[in-house]
Length: 265
Length: 177
Image 1: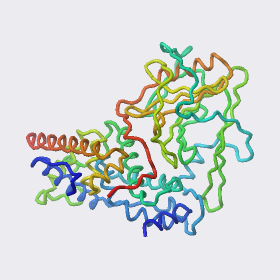
Image 2 (image 1 turned 180 degrees about the horizontal axis):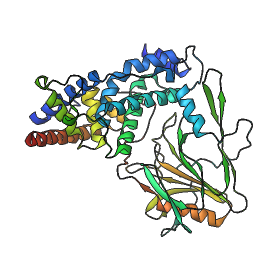
Image 3 (image 1 turned 120 degrees about the vertical axis):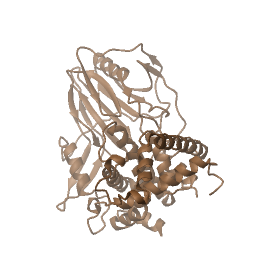
Image 4 (image 1 turned 120 degrees about the horizontal axis):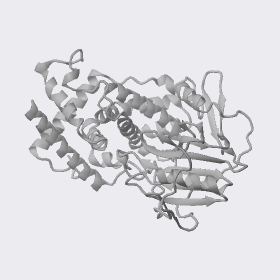
């Protein structure tokens, strides 16, 4: 035992020993069997994605075009880059509300909106949970399929068509990758419903970062709601979506994410 | 050796990556098992974590942080899985799941092990994660902190509280039995 170990009571010692034994026994009774075929394919090849993963991505990105896509993107939110402070008593969803709930969080949206995409892994760092709206959208991720069933993913930027007062809202999270997610935390600059958020405007669109409970702006696993529209009503509907956003009670942030922090020993 | 394997895996060497997984996965599996309390779920979490790690390993610039990095991915996915499962119980480990299980021998301490796993059910997933890393994966507390991405002091306090809650839950279970 090192000096970092808590001092345990007799009951705690007993519980710890019993837990250690139980987990060891359970893992031996049901030994781990990984399907190495999910990533192994024989000869090393740079940036290859396993067949199972590829299948999942391909299914999720069935709408993605293979070819050259002209794209436009909103700049990603950077802490502190928000413009001005806005406050809202809680905008409401216009018309009938649809409801999104993935077990991690939920929100309402106008039922007239279409589901343009469900959950998919966008890059090595981002997971998209939903793309909704009245406009058209195409993923900026291009997939190349090899004959052996593996593929490359190359993501540049999505393309949106929100002309004529249409709107597209993309809800995504940063879940990993080579990004320092422990930078100086920014303060909220807007309040939508009960949610203190970090709002960044870009033209007539906006992005709102919503902190995971216990987390800070700029940390991993926060949710970004990205609204693309040239219409004030569309932006208001997106604001209402953010105002209705709720984390599942079980969600809590385990701390900022530093992928390059050496493991102390 | 691990540094070389990480460097090779970052360049796309799948065999090197597989060796890294083979070395680390068994102990991480025990931690994941504590969180999800179901061997089927634990297997799936480990599979998904391995795939995710493969996809993201190019972003791991410091080879020395490989193990903590992988554990964090796996435990995070386990916590997410547990949260999504909610009250849904598959083949949880417990007294009611005794028959047909390997090692089900009442004279070999099986009941106590089942009691421990049943006691875990009453703890939050984050508590199970820290207990699983410390007593399942047999990590020192600083390594537990690294795997969870939390300060050492926070890890110590969380571990102590979680262990206390487990001890109480086990005591309650003893009373019921």
